[in-house]
Length: 135
Image 1: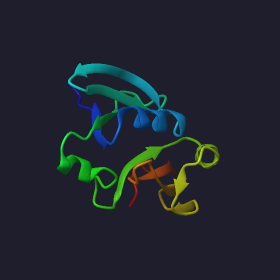
Image 2: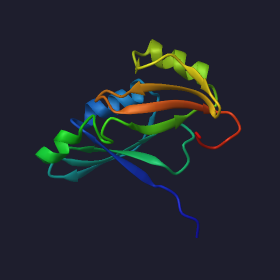
Image 3: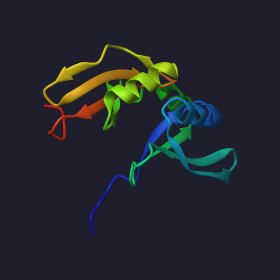
Image 4: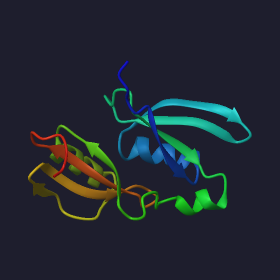
């Protein structure tokens, strides 16, 4: 049986603000939003057409978890959002107020620009050109 990544956890400050940002700014869809009791939710979002991979928005439940909000990877790019139309998505995200850290740039592997989510985690918006990963 083949494997796949089912979900990647993103520690957030608040379920609703995170859901609203990912849906409103990036156009993600809510895949599931279930009450687990005791203030916990199972909140999965994904870009349209993402297949089986989801982003689990998980509210910080302890001081160490809260300290990781916005710095899940120690300042490195956290996630790579691949697109089939970089210019379309870049323009749309700018219009929606997404903060980019740089102008789009061409690399050997494609077109890329780093942006940040509402907490400061860094993402690559990336349109690949033939290869399946950066060199």
